[in-house]
Image 1 (tube, helix red, strand yellow):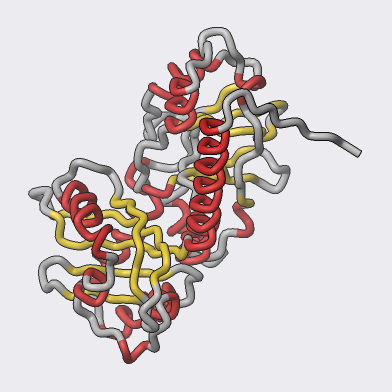
Image 2 (cartoon, one colour):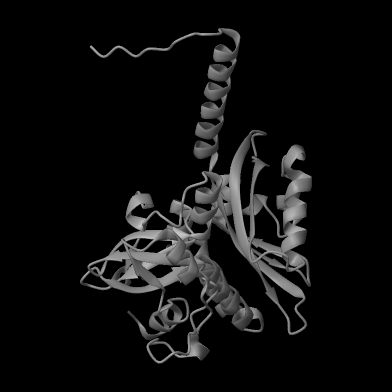
Length: 311
């Protein structure tokens, strides 16, 4: 990696992520997750001043130094909803699939890394060394913090630096947006516009270019989520909603971002990404419709028995 790229990744990779074995009890793993790792500990290979690390709220599950799973706070909520006996079960009994990982040698730039997070809609990315062993962890929050830091560094930078930053992120597979809350100017990448069917010159730099195209049924909800984040009630701004395209149709998008704040804690900038999730939402809605039809059928045909005959 070039020196500047190495420095970028040093700031987002947490070198001392918490890990447990497959035979650890779920309850014990939850206790481990609740502990806060100190980036300044001697066994962490990155100095504290080089970190933009947010709370990782996850534990990596390893077996013979190989990553086999990832336990997150979201998983624990799911276990609670299913009323699973977490004090008895081990991780071997609940881990069902390997997480998305990336080799450190394959990381080339922040836009590509952001694409990886958005493509798989993940919040944590374990990093592997050349022997496929755990080398570190990147969280979506730490990545956004680094992007925000870059935005801060370029705020008073020469125009050429500003243009290079925009050019780098314009090549992302997801739409990138950058909202300067002081000037109320919002940058939209070419991909952001393309997703909605527009050419570069057809979208200006007003926040209304986005806000005015939110589906009326989603508008108040999006603003509520945005207001909560600006008020520091949430770590991230994250919201799914319908956006109107140039041809009048609507697509589902997932917007995720994080505010950059001044010394007083006031939000001064908001940077994030926009991912087209129309295909996933269509599949979810189709499944919900089938489940509703099935429920209606069983409720209206008492005693009906469904039998599958294998030939």
